[in-house]
Length: 286
Ligand SMILES: C[S@@+](CC[C@H](N)C(=O)[O-])C[C@H]1O[C@@H](n2cnc3c(N)ncnc32)[C@H](O)[C@@H]1O
Image (cartoon, rainbow, N blue to C red; front, side, top):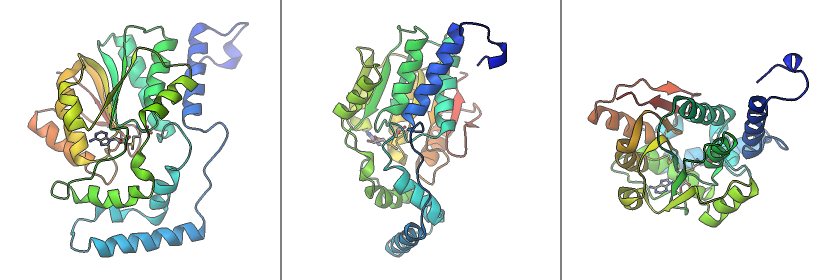
């Protein structure tokens, strides 16, 4: 953004566009009006108890990665997700989406923008807002989700997901209906025919979904099988020069395992960058 001291008279179009996007990100993160309260001693004690209960329940599992989380982390996982924000994403997460969308536009990478795992729709709303403010009306924003929350994970493929599932049940498994997501788009004035919903479980909906070509695929579906289903069905449609964003890459969830297995099976060596300690992403080069 232009420095205030450099501005004379009217704000430039580019400056106005960036100010809109910054405001949109703040609104989507609900950071304009409220900040989450820090955990109290009682909250932390509750989380310690829950952690001990989980450990007892899954004591046969040798790989309790989820339990390596501190009680403070557990608290934020549960409590943070109860906030009314339209995205769960951090500032670094929304900045990452912002920069990937603008790179796609400036590099002319062909394709639509997709998020698989949308919850209340915030990151997809951000993608649509950036497209619209830049006049990029030739691209769609595609939202793939069950619109009824996370699926029951498979203990055979990833025990970490089973443990996380117990925790996430406490916040409703991120269930947000399609009507709510549409309403959220409308609140920002961004709902139109270029927003496409693909409703259903990924293994059923994605193989036949009406998706031609993608410039961005943002995966935020937490679990091993969900991430694998999304990568398997969507990566072949990603343009060279496009971006894969993996929201849960740094979490103690099956996402990371699925990413590594998929990359190995498909000889993908493009380096994974980190937006913060949670979000990984790479640019497809071949
Ligand atoms: C953590 S939430 C997404 C958060 C959202 N991207 C945000 O920025 O706030 C995970 C989402 O993935 C969806 N999901 C996970 N696995 C799925 C699957 N196999 N099929 C369909 N939806 C799935 C859930 O319904 C939920 O909306």
